[in-house]
Length: 438
Image (cartoon, rainbow, N blue to C red; front, side):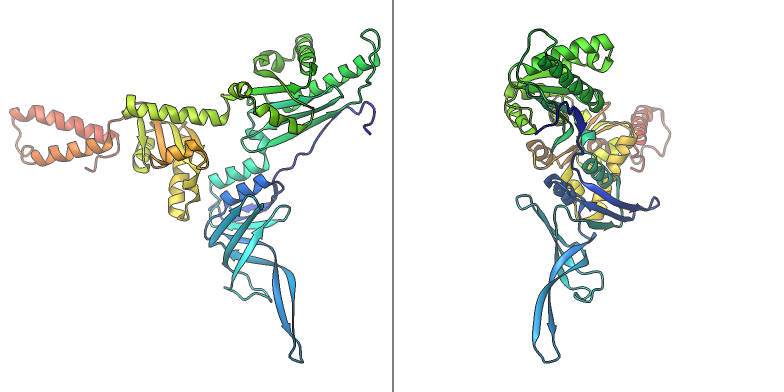
């Protein structure tokens, strides 16, 4: 039974636990100890692992012992093992990551170098050791351990019995930031001073304060307000009236972000009904995923209408970045899972360079249609701030011009001034683009 006027209290939502972090600031080597708590954490873990990492966790191993009489007994022993990752299998249905590789730590039960399989499961600590924890890895850990920081949608579900959940919705999970559970008398008395009306005002005030405290309107693009019946409408009127009276600027300046919708209860699972409403989903067009798709569509259109501002392929995008020309970098997450450390470092360095030069970076999941579409144009592309001539055409034109006029620059003649000027212009263009070695 709920306690009377229990009010509102924050809920400690479950996320990946960062147990220990020990990384060198000099070269990025070091270890991190993590504990996955929800299935989404295993997806983040899968993206952290690559061939050559050292992973340590507990495992069960069948050990056979021989007695002095020659008889043998076998039983399973739990032990800590460290293996060098050679293969990674992720089974989202079973909620398990299986790692295969040779043992790299001496043990009384497993010889050094013997092949072994480790399973990473929920609620069990594991240690990952890398030769370099680059910024992409660290961003992934930050996102897993603080998922609400990437939330662009807030959702409040409430019901007339005094139950409400204030949630932040990320691209992969819903985080409960606050729960309100207030006792509401069922009988309505006469007038506005009845026990029921007083309890509803107290309930609305608790929700009001929870939203004000947990929702960052600078980051959140849409606030879904849902309930059965007219509870949401009554609360929204209360919110507008109180916001004006108290001069709470976050509510006054962002009232257009509130979307009222129907839900069957004040429980978190009622959000599933909201997401199935096409009219509601159309209001979420300004979220991160929609922005990524819009940027990809913009790139594809630019390839037809203004190709000198649409570059793709690592070499061309890298050269554009050296000219500080990249406005938006589009890259698939599959490139960061490359087993080649050299290849991964190339793309990590590119992302960090674009960000340091003031460009925006959009990372596309290869599990989405947009990511597959980007993969068809090499997996990396860029929208430029200003047009740049095609590098290949410029290089070929300069080489051809030099071959045709190798002998014409030895003698100074008035007749060659026009060609000299043309060639000088090309050389200047190439020098500006860092191609003056041709």
